Image (cartoon, helix red, strand yellow):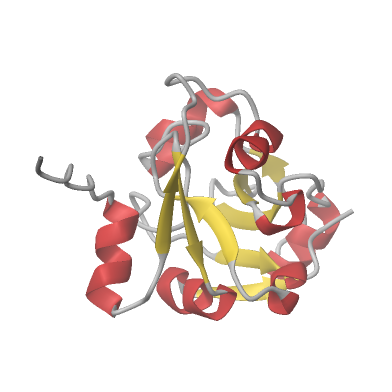
Length: 161
């Protein structure tokens, strides 16, 4: 019996093109997104290794992307400081797909409609690998934080409450 071919996401294609090693991990979410903790639980992973992608908006309609562990909360003041702006607000859920090209629960910093500034929590520095969305619900990618920094043109920042 032939092995089922893995369906590549844009994020996977970007990593492949850059020669970055990653490991896709699938889980059954029934097509629905509950929350990031459910994602980590479904994969049997510690919460501090599964990173959520949050999109914020500045005063002049500029967008900024932040990655942090699923069980932590984004500090908007620290995030604004990292981005070099006065203040930030969370992007409303209904705007996520329009701005990023991804749906809630499948948002990744790789391959968004535009290249927005990306900031990754400094907590990732101490990890051998972190897990991020592959760009669709039900698939995560495990990769080295430094590889994500390179692929997403990101930087580390203190962004957690």
